[in-house]
Amino acid sequence: MILSDISRASKIGFLVRDAEVSTLGKLNALSTEGTLVFLSDKSYINAALDRRVSAIIAKHDIAEAILNERECGVLVSQNPKEDFYMLHEHLVANNHYADRFDSIISSSAHIADSAKLSANNVVIGANSLIEDNVVIKAGTEIGENCIVRSGSILGNECFEVSSIKSRQRVILHGGNLIIGNYVEIQSNSTISKGLFPGRNTVIEDEVIIADLVHVAHGVQIGERTKIAAGVTLSGNVSVGSDVWIGPGAVISNGLKIGSGSYITIGSVVICSLQENSKVSGNFAIDHSKFVKFIGRIR
Image (cartoon, rainbow, N blue to C red; front, side, top):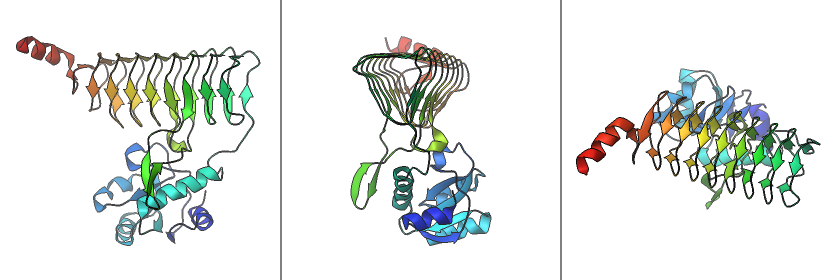
């Protein structure tokens, strides 16, 4: 996409410098080169120097400061955040992020009669099982030999709330949900699609997700990870391979959980974890320290 084209079509922003844009995204969740971001505060200028940022939408003074530091596309706006989301919703509504296609369901997939699948932009691979009352929305791709248990919802919009034209509402999602092979999602879980196509929600091969788990937009989960019942993974969390996340754990947005980590029951994780970490508690700390602390207060 060319910044001048989408600005002209949406009637948003004043173009100062043109650039090629592949996606919109947020500074705290950059994944793809060619990302357009918004800046509302000068304190984030250094973060916007990241080479994955190809364009910004900002007020005039911030835009001028960016132009003094690097070459990138610039749209000037008096309300950068609001115009950013309006621009994003224009792209979603007009299918600029992805072509529309008829859903592709393998002839060997087993789909319950009561399951509800979008007629467009769903892919389900060979030998996958979709049980009763599952809802699968557009932008969801499921690999081979997967199981989705009753009542789960895949590819739904997630909790990205902003004010547009003085009204608070949930922002349209333009990313996808991509699920690998041999994945099992148990009953009544919700797995949201990405907010932006530059940060899809991704669940890699052999991941097992138990009942009543919420996986927010842009979460990416590595191979063979096991997620127990009642877990909440907030937006844009990155989970490595072979991780265990215990029942009822909550992981705050944007964190990185290293491969081989072990998060015990009920933990509330607010900091990223190195590989092979083991944490417990609210707020979660190293498990051995937690055990010593509990021992002292008993």
